[in-house]
Image (tube, rainbow, N blue to C red):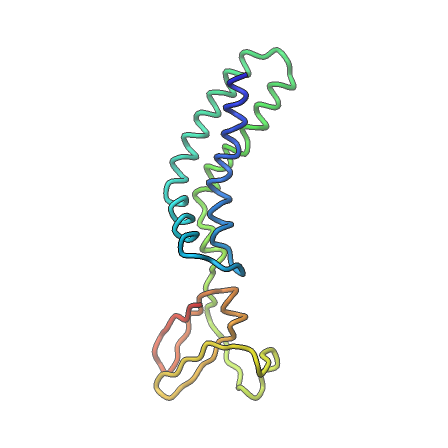
Length: 159
């Protein structure tokens, strides 16, 4: 019974190390400095903890497998092992790069020809060397990063 309980508890632990940082640092949601700190801290040690959780889960599954005569108990142990093993791979994925992918090659449209920005929409405006660019906050809220060149000077606009 203790083996089953340990295996069942390892599943949410391993998945929490992957899911919680994503939930804390997701776009379109207000983020607090503390949530960012916790999210990045979890991302820092999640790869090692998920390896330990997977090794412990594998050991438990082997012991449960050897000690059980019922096929459904063996199958359940393997099913519980799968998300823990998957967490090892997921903990190594850079989800922030996917969530905050920079908008490269920003295109320009003359202000009088723009039909997707309303007069009352907020924009992030930049002026360099007599050249001006405005990035709609609605767009910035999704990408968070825009790589561009304004007035011959490369810049990265962030929101």
